[in-house]
Length: 278
Length: 133
Image (cartoon, rainbow over all chains, first blue to last red; front, side, top):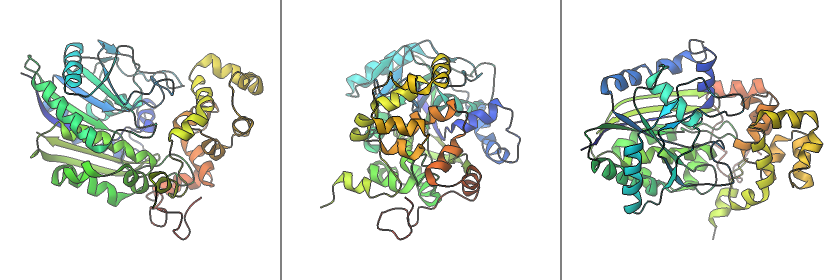
């Protein structure tokens, strides 16, 4: 039987990818942020999972306004890094876990989560930056990755409650897979940030701190947070944090925080990273 | 009674990308999406007005693109993840666009972020004194 052994959440700012690609990770601006991820990289190499379920959002790359799936699961054997307008990032091709992904798609739909199944899906910085932050810059990613893309661009994104329950259903799906696999789940995006309008640049450290605290202390408070609260308090794009609740929902109620890191800023965004063991 | 829409619209300097804005901004955003392809970027740079003719935008939307009125684009239905593609085509940084939208230089904006970002205090409601926008 497969099992979920832990979860991680991290921001996925595109400028972080650019800093890596341009060799600026040791600069005064970036070094403090990258140093904060050293323990997470160590945790990943010690945990050595057989697969990563990576919850992220596509930023008008594979999907556009032509078609807006609320929840999509990548079932292919591989996912190429996307050309986001200046050529694809020079990161390894993301290998999928097609067997587990198809099993999850079936299990989730029968559990009443009507997933969109995707075979052709270039993956943008939303997916590759978290892999870099958690796994470094290897020639090959350390294990297969199952992308789960969530719409957080077109209002309304799924509710926090729905996301948490999807996490629960993912756990059920993983545990009903008949191979012995250790699986880690990532929730990505956030933390507080607003990218548009005169209020661009909004950061709310207090909101972010309470969010990090309550991922283990009181996840049910977070599950009940309405969209207006995210947008008003954490900025219009801070609503990405609902994706962290998918990760949290996939872990047991008494899961324990083992690491966290918080840093302002990465470009326009407050960066958060947390590791929770099941 | 306050509706959900009124609550969102009460947040200053914020333009929730809801159904109404998405419907209004579809062709503007899909024009931006087209700039993901190298050959389209070249065609747009060669003759902006002619390139825009193939997208049925409103006059106002067209004006915001030609004038690079970044805040204006958002107000007529542009979504930041799409308009940022026009910024990238122009070789502008995201912080440049964010500065333009919020009325400061790129350097002032970058300095604000290094100082901890824009505070939420007095920026929650259009009734807050001194709010942005």
